[in-house]
Image (tube, rainbow, N blue to C red):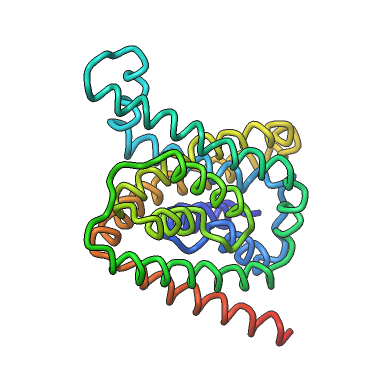
Length: 266
């Protein structure tokens, strides 16, 4: 993998991690097109995800500071924030169970680009359906429940399947449950933090397999993912406020359909 390839893949990850079009699906297809791409396990993919998660920490730093400090604060706001911490922990449980139980199966799916294209069609359908149905709601909830957290955590676990957008599917699930769009997006991004950190810990053992000459490209790709991620979080929050998720549904259908046509014609 060249230095330029690493940066381009990092930019692709940063854009598609937060825009609901499946970062893992795009990485699989891009790596397939590169032809000579190799990595130990899924280490490079995990490092790119770590870069985007640093973007989440930076963008939502005030939210995170409030959640952490609520553990020792005793004001009224701290009570709500501690409840949110509990929801994030609860939502992380089904994600961890699904990820650890089916880890090898999910990793094998990264070698099947046709499956990725099919799952992009599923992602597009979820986005379209969620926005259509959420528009019928006259009042959206801003307060999340334990059920919301468990449903979102389960959907996030299944979104390990490449082609299923993690952000898209979790936001769609919350919209379908009547949750306000901005609330859904914030919870989706914050819930991703423990999941990605867990995946990074599982991939630590692969670090010593990185060739010395590949260290700089890996680092460059991670930084590119971070910077692009910051921009795209801001963009997605604006899209959600304007209720324009269907734009990304059309995109997923286009890329998934075009990819299937290309792969089946080979």
